[in-house]
Length: 255
Length: 255
Image 1 (cartoon, one colour):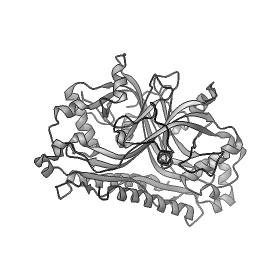
Image 2 (cartoon, rainbow over the protein chains, first blue to last red):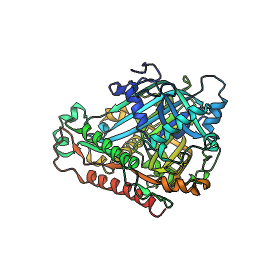
Image 3 (tube, chains in turn blue, green):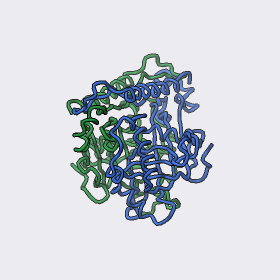
Image 4 (tube, helix red, strand yellow):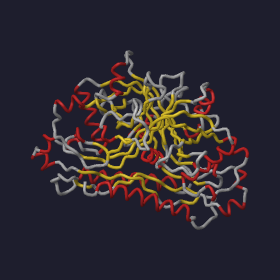
């Protein structure tokens, strides 16, 4: 399943790096600890950009997978500018937002400075944001967002949420209108003329320096009383490290 | 030196996390492999957001340090939408852009789902972008950007740049109008009522899971002929790993 290629989401430069599949795009958003949410404030020439926690989900089809049509849930505070603007938006559709997430996977060092690049995965979603008012949907999104930070965390926290907690948490639902991803995952690529330049080939090291997100040993708080770090936390640390390293190792093998 | 606190850049939620010093803000941008550049396309309700390589610099005062007033140089392609829009901008000032960079340093796990958080450093710059046409300034920025990817890299590439390379590289200079940073670097903080909840304290593990950017062994390209990875590359790998780990270890010690 793909987002239709339209003017707004088409990758123009390096078209071959474009990817429109829901699975890829939603996956990149899902793997990002933070997304950058951008929207227009009619009173300012500068777009507002906020780092927020975002997670893909579907309240109406909770068994949907990453490749299915999904909404994006964003976490914020009710007093927040984005919440106010979204509430003030007179259209039924919601406030237009652009959501971006990017991961750098490698520094790509070529013969010429010009051909230097990154290996990266970046995704953009365009959609309309509205404030979630329904309590059941709000709780669904809060659980989803908490479990995005550490899978299974929700059930290991002090529950149930208090009325105040629910009231003072703001959740935005973004109905996705369009999206795209752009991915580079390859060795350096120099221009033909440089590939025949013996002096350059003999003197300039070319290759990829892999980069990934590493996760460390959990550090207990000053008021923590639970001696052993629980399994849902240690498992997440192991899995994140393994996944991130595997991607890096796989991506540069034999390319 | 600080950016003046105005309506546009004031941190509203968690004011105590706001930081307006040029040194801090420029430093966060500088440590980001990518920044997200957002601007308004008059033909679309959605802001455009592009991941780009950005680096702080000053062509007129090349000895300036991170705490001094600086421009932001962005790397792109001349055919790029941002370049065209910036060229088409009729004002002398340039096209308004918002530039954001965020680093997650830790997953902050509290007693209540509500009090979960991240440790993070995020920075936003507001400014006006114009295309750099002067060849000397363009070369200055290209060297700066290449050396941002790996310090000292420029002098280890095939030089000089060809006329075509200079012509087909687009550089934007953003004159910074305002900026702010927001930083959380602490252990979890639960509400007073939870801190008295013996059952929660006895059953919920609380603490921080550190996260940082790790850099791996350089992987040579299929056409690389230089057997030993050069010092400027190995040094960068070591320094990035050391700096990133040190920050994480320092930040959670005794908090």
